[in-house]
Image (cartoon, rainbow, N blue to C red):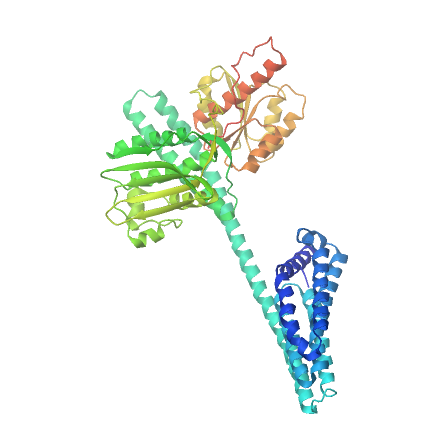
Length: 598
């Protein structure tokens, strides 16, 4: 019947929930039919009494299985048995109308009663799909009524041939119901299997993208670190130019990896939107300033047209900035002459205040066919787009998905040869007044010598992080897994630990948990998590294990320095509270202890 008890519970709950959704129809039908069938009985009062009795039975079902408790109650065998009894009694009461019609209406009443019972059987097929016990409980009373009608036919005046015809027709009705229910079951099973296969395929694709992304981030960290080191130390202009090309290329590859991961999360339904205070005015201005250099390089203008000061708002600044970056990147990418205008305004509709951002370019515009494919993942406008401009075709697709997740929309208006306007509308939750920015200014480098332990299973990562920190640290020690790190932490004191998450022998989370539960000299040493995952669950796991900061791979030097400054500043602040007369030799307190390197 059911593969597991849990699946059986779910099937019961689905059927009972379906019955609850049909309660209005089940109440309305007797009200319509009862006056008609009162013609057979000759008593309107009897019809009303029957309707009231049926209403009471529906009220009992609603009381026994309230919507909020359906799933929980049907986990128990007694409640499932009770549900079957309720369904069967409903069938008995509902089908009894057919017998009443036959008794008082003679052969014509029997014919009407047979049609009534046939309708009850059809309803049983439609409402009990997915759960055989409920179907049987709903069907059995109607089979009994068909037998009674066939037996009553001759006593009510029908010839033998008509009585036999009624019995055969009833048998065919029941057989058709059984075949229909079985076919319905096969259809539902095929749909469930197809859905499970699609979910499995999506999960496998997401896992593959995550795995490939994680593996690619390891060499990317080294490329970023090496290029930054060469560019910062070399006095040769040619070397610095080459290092800049390598650095820009690595950052572009990181951006593509982030797009792939975001698309994978969106498809799996695992991308969440934050709700935090942020300076909307600064976000818009900073984004425009960031892209102004790219616009100047192409020889196109970039102009901002904004209304009154936008001030502070509540939402997800990281995802909003991501949308802005995608819109401006595309506008500048496809504009060779003229310029790009960004218009920012606030509107008010029936649902509240809206933020509207329009990015208009003087590029080649798009044809209707290109507009239809603009927001499709991995689509490019034509075959030459990828060759000329690069990219994966994910930017605008992700931007629209993010806009919809935030309760808004991203639309486009364009004509071939007349430029393009992308319009973003989002709900705007303003904050009164101004707030002090949370966080800290990212320093260029740690301000004092440090003793740092780097824990990572990839040698290339250990070398890359060491290359970043060596000029500013008195001691850099490396370990290839959590177990080796604990052994080093037991014999040497460190100022900061940089801890990878996924490692053989012992992972980062387990290593930090053991460190915090120990009585060693590094029990309270700050730990910075280095990982390719930035999900909220992962961050919570890191914090629960005892880590103070979180930086995404691939890591750039300024991100790493900022995280180190934050955790050491937070530690010094705690020491100052505990011992007001003693000042730490490391640095002044900082405001934030968690650094997100995205």
